[in-house]
Structure formats: C-alpha cells, structure tokens
Image 1 (cartoon, rainbow, N blue to C red):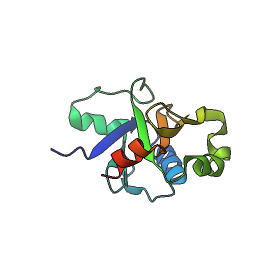
Image 2: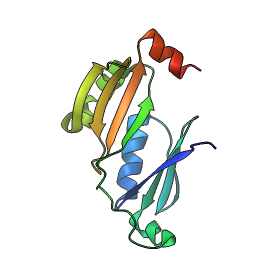
Image 3: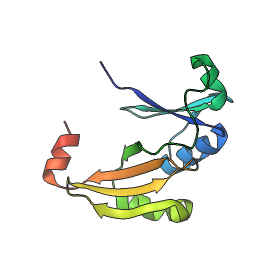
Length: 133
C-alpha cells in the first residue's frame, strides 16, 4: 500500500489553488473548475469543490470545518520560508518557527479555509536521518 494523496474540500477551489501555489512555489494543475492537484515527489494535495461530493454520494464532508488534520510540507529552510511568506501568512500564523521536541523546526499557519499547514525542516541528527531514508 502507498499513501498518495490528501484532498481538501472547499467552496472556493481557485482561492486555494492560488494560496497553495504561492506558499509552495509549485504549479497547481487545475483539471476543472471543481478539481485541482499540487503534486510533490512524495504526495499529492488534491483540491476539490463541494460539487465533487455528489460523486461520492452527497453531503459527506464540509469545507472549512477541519479541526484534526495538519497538512505538512518538508522545506529546506523553515526560517527562510517564514521570511519569504511573511506578508502572505502574517495574519494566519499560529506558531512562528520553533524547534519541536522531536527534532523538526516548525512553522504553523492556516490556509484560507482555516486548515492548519505546517512547514518544517528536520534539524536534529535523528530527525534528519528519519527523513533522509
């Protein structure tokens, strides 16, 4: 088995496409007005409109109502990313870059739908080894 994707359901696909393209600096492929994907080497972030829920049977998810998941992106230098994104995430920063007990330096902020996003850089030898396997 291979974990390959996370999908965010939103009422505004274009807003999230713009946001995730801006924060990652990566292209987001827009397939239709209801579906887009940001593909990284290890996982894909899919963005689907509420209209796509009808394909799964109806009202099975609610946009902007996530209180449990954090979307995590490994970056080369979390402090540099924080400086680069300071204007974009100024009002939605939850935690400025902080070294966590498990060895990652972490920046936590919210996307336009209020989903938590974590940019992190492994900084201890153990954390670096974990992610370099």
